[in-house]
Picture 1 (cartoon, rainbow, N blue to C red):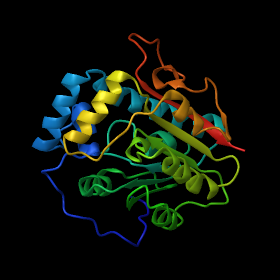
Picture 2 (picture 1 turned 90 degrees about the horizontal axis):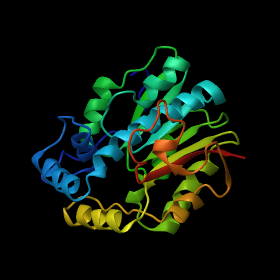
Picture 3 (picture 1 turned 180 degrees about the horizontal axis):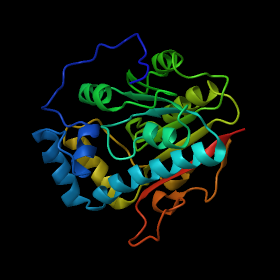
Picture 4 (picture 1 turned 180 degrees about the vertical axis):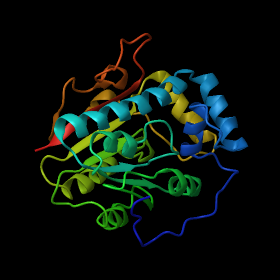
Length: 266
């Protein structure tokens, strides 16, 4: 990495007996950085809700398209990626710095295996900065304090929560957390957000996920998810399935139940 914040770098040892969302996501994407507990619950989830594999892939593609658009068309040069997960194709810093080598990216995750991979693999362009904060995204005070070592709060920031806010299961708490982050950044900042919308199938999948020992993740009604952008200006094409957000190529299957948006702070 070009720069790495100094501060709270101690993390818990890797718990290989409890499924973790970052490692299950890696399993669904076909990666090898997961453990038997992750694979067992991941396979059970995929059997009960086959679309989860498509959602994992669609989420990564949406992330890349959103970052590319913000860097190339909007001129955003700072990105705060909350709940990073394990490195995969086209991570935020690679997409942003391909457009703008001077872009600055801060990744946040609380899984020690993500930290190990981030330090080894998330190396950005020398003109910019790429750093990692080992913290829980709900600890906004710590995240913002550490991110301040890389990001300039007087300049717009893209705040990214891809398939992570569902882990904050209380709607009011999730909305308050978003406000805490967005209030820290100036007008012209953007929010990139997606999560699973609630249907009878996704609700059952969320219950199985929690019953399997992983940190609970809730699907939300589309109207609730849309409400997180109430005080922001949605970029076209607005709020809907991430499969339909500025796709690079024609859609070949059904849109996924993962909905989201990119929106600007006034």
